[in-house]
Image (tube, rainbow, N blue to C red; front, side, top):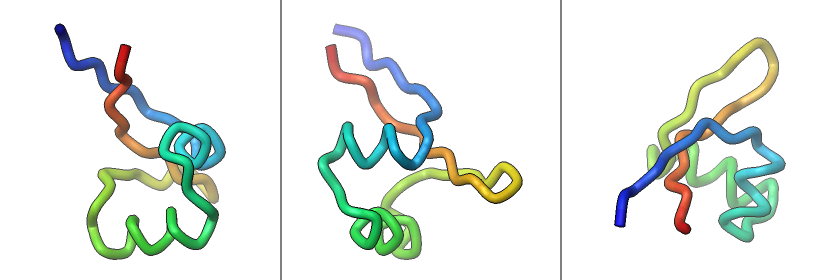
Length: 50
């Protein structure tokens, strides 16, 4: 089984990880999620499980 990763938007990340806006922000602030900011949007490097 190969691990696949992709950059997901905030909305996609919240849906994939079943998080609220606040939970996502706290995980980002604690360094639990790899992210990058593009303009005003955040994108997260998330493992895609098949």
